[in-house]
Image 1: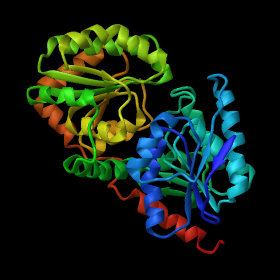
Image 2 (image 1 turned 45 degrees about the vertical axis):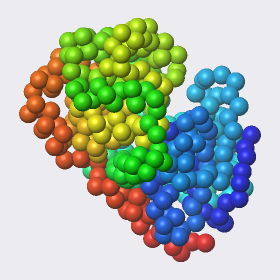
Image 3 (image 1 turned 135 degrees about the horizontal axis):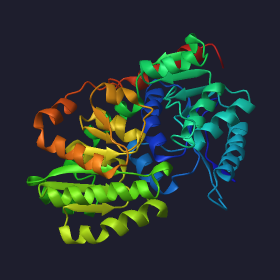
Image 4 (image 1 turned 180 degrees about the vertical axis):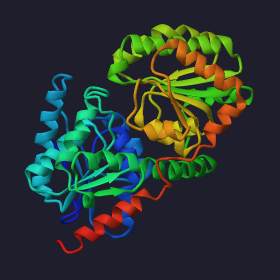
Length: 394
């Protein structure tokens, strides 16, 4: 089932549905609008509860939305609903091109729907690979399959572009442009600071309670949600955080806990009582909206995460990142010295954090690393390519 508002005739259609996709495609949408190019937005519906505040922050009003009526949590069911709903939108809108982002189920379904209708596809953040089929799952195959369907491949780094070349994508179709996450993080931090100063934005109560501790404590932001970390992995991460807090009374931790019970129940079982005892030095809270997350990263000495987006946002905001996975499709972070892969082994996490907290020079080197993901001008480069290639088409 779909709902729709009016759309520009023959627009470039941005098709996304999850929180990270919205954040990373917002700069592209803004740039296309700035140039006067017809552009429309379809929200494919996965992160409905998080979307409204993001759309308000980025001044986006989606013209179209797929309303997901899910009967179970299976990926096959989700993909089928997305494919049918998005196909309906595309049939009515008749877009000149469809832009998708990254590696989610909505990415693949959006590309499939466009391919079936003969609409050219632009893949933003193309070419990321771990070369391990199920790590991460299902993202690794989603992005590989999307690459088989795309017309424009907007690669964030030279390594991502090289991956596409090795897979046989014509060089003329690969455009190394940087990562839109950098555009969003840099512009978003400025906007967040302005809104806070003007009283137009308030931090959530959990962060307000954290603020007094930052006068004497270094902040560490933690996130974890990947399927491959469910169970023992999440438990190990939580226990490592507890040990670090016990051994460093000048450390404060904020952990926005993913709402999935496979994550939430374990985190609160391991850390809920400790959070109450520490009186604000450990903050467990629901997922933060984007401005609040930027506020945390901007003030953090370290970030521990299995998220791809936070690897990029951390680099943009000079926040060293420890990757809670055994591999990353963003090896440039590690090569640049801005991140370290630690996996979910509790001992390794504790040892690495302790070493960095006690070695000021090592932490400073990570903060001073050159951001490998771009300079904040990715969206204009994408718009340049689209304007050039679509100029002669109605």
